[in-house]
Image (cartoon, rainbow, N blue to C red; front, side, top):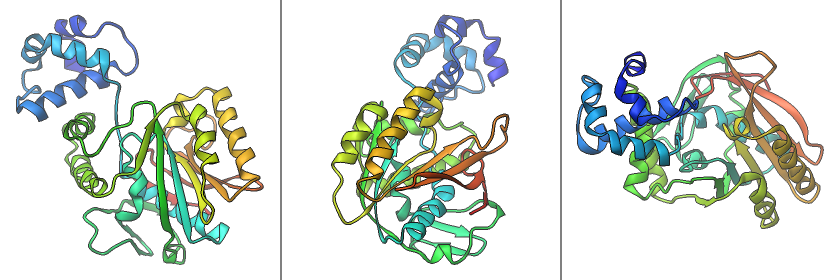
Length: 297
C-alpha cells in the first residue's frame, strides 16, 4: 500500500512536504475514514484520495501521530515489580511521560502470562503475553504492589472516555494488525472504568511541579517508553537533573526505554534508576512494542 500511494499523483495534492511522519498521518487518515464511515480505502485508494482530498489534507495538517501500544505493559510489568523489590515498597505512585491516552498507566488491571507464572486478576478482560528470550523469574512475579496514583504529561493527551479519541488511537494502528486492534479495544474498556489523570504540557517543564506535589506513603515511579526519542540531549539532561534533585528528598525511581548501545537497532533496553544513588541499571532487552523480552536483572 505504501508503494502504491507513493506513485499516486493525488498524494502530492494532499501531503505538502516529506516530513518523516507524513506517511503515518496519511495512512491514519485513510484508516480513520474506514472506521468512521465504513468505506474501503484500500482496494482503490486513488478514488478515495481524490474524493476526500480536502478532508485528508486537514487531517494531516492538524492531527499528529497518536499511538498507545498496550503490549508494552507486558515488558514494563517486571520493571515495576523490580522497583518494588529493590526498594522494598508496597505502594507506587505513577507518572508517565508521554502517556497518550494513559493505557499503560493502568497496567495493574491487565492479566499477564510469562513462562514462570502469571500475574494479575484471573478474570482481567485483557491478558498479555509474548515471547521470552530469557524468562522473568517466578519469584519476581510473586510481588503485588498497589498503585495509588496515576498521572501523565503529554503534549496532546487523549481522553479514553471520548469515542472520537478512541477512534483516533485505532486509526493509527495498521489496519491489517487485527490483534493489536483487539488489544486496544480491551485496553480502552479497562481504562474507561477509572481513567488516569492526564494533563497537557511539556514533560521537562511540568515534571518538577508534579514531583513537588507528591504525597508521603508511596514510591514515586516515573516512566517513559517513547518520549526520550523526541527530546534533545539537553532536555533529557534537564529532566534527569530534576529527578536527581527530587530523589534526594523522597523515594523515587525511573523506568526508561532507550537504545541499549550505539548502533543497535534490533532491540531496545529497559533501564532503571532508583534514588538516592540514581545509578543506571539495564534490566532487560525487548522489542520496541513489547513483542519479546529478554530479562537480564
